[in-house]
Image (cartoon, rainbow, N blue to C red):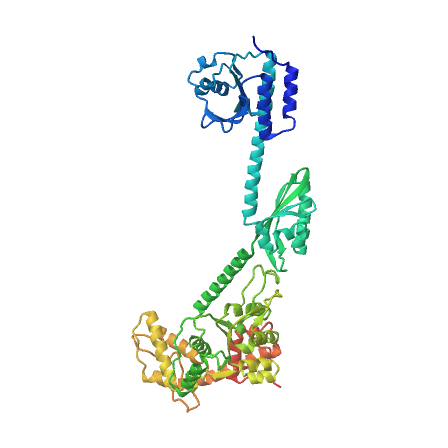
Length: 634
């Protein structure tokens, strides 16, 4: 006669008492042992279903008064297969071996009865089962079935809880790994923006140990305006959204008091009923430096392109006259030194050519040669042109600009027409020469620069100093090694040498054979006084090539015979008449220039200067004043 089973109430009480103090794996072990005793069966087990392998792994197995560890089996050909695949309770009260003869475990245990019930996720997926077997018949009454289902339900709930906990742990571990390994600085903040967590990237970015940042307000690690911005965004985030980019980024303060710009985002979330914030910072210091460098290179490229356009020829200094041999000797002596050089001479004598020769023969030959025409720069922009400016330094300064001195770092800067430089800029130039440092317009940051200065002028700087238009200290700082470039009329036979060079060059450009100089051409070249010097000679030869016919070079229509101080040139009556006409035009030109200078209060360059009123370059006006003998009255 079958042994009487306890009542349903007693079974539930025994289940509750046996499992009340345990959770997790301990709960499941207590559950199977308690159920086996309460139901008076040989074995009870709880499993997890491994769908890929079509197998069951026992998480707790009580058999014949002991626990079975690491029990795992395939469900094919077993009663458990029907439980899993039908997703319903399966009960065989007796003769289970006859029904499943291929289940070796049933045979070995001499099993007689089997009961199993699946447990599932809320969406209906089978994740395991609760089952019992006995070596005697086991009849499942409705009361026992209810209890059996309760046991299975408790087991399934615990399996789901364990799975959820495992997923949470895995998620937390993944988050922890991501948090620790992220390249961006990540802060977890409480509702008052105190730092609760900070990753290693944050510690490196702010140069502070992570533990020293904990508990501090993040706003203390930001600039004043950035701190206000973050507080305002946090308030706006509370009322509207849960995530926001920080417009314009933040200015962060490192532990060593240095600052760096950073892109930033701010998000809000809840943790255990409390409000939290997450701030992610990414330093853009290197990016901004790269962008600035790119703009500098673009500016340098644009400058060099303009230089290439202006520099039509880069020939060596040509000349065999004693005066030019002296210049060449001076260049060879001073070029290898770092000394400043002041090149003087009339307009068109080739002062820039001498400056370039100095650079090519110096130890800075591989570095930039930057030319600045001081007379061509408007006074209002001269400081920015020389030293650059920061973004927003003045109206229209939409980008940072690199100045000429910064472009010339490591190389040579050539200050042409230095006598035209405004007095206020002369003081700043003196500082660069003496200290090797300057500040761009709109910046308080001092920049160091290593530049060799070569200056040139067609003015008498001694007189400019006496007149108060040029700083005496700057003059002596520039006048370390003076080189005077002679006028073309002082170079004797160099006129013919240079004329031949220019003739060959322009004939090659237009694809003509080079004609020879006639006796008339040579006489005219020697007789003319060349007030425009080498530049004028170059222009005359270019016109002569254009007008040349039948390979016969003629200068009659290009260059008149005139006095050069060594005798009166012979010529026809029409040529003499032409000289008188030129004298009249020269007097008229002089009167016009004097009237313009008087109207401008004898101011030559700059705004409201005579050069501006006449519509000519200041250097040209200065040259003509010298040629025409115009002097400012005392």
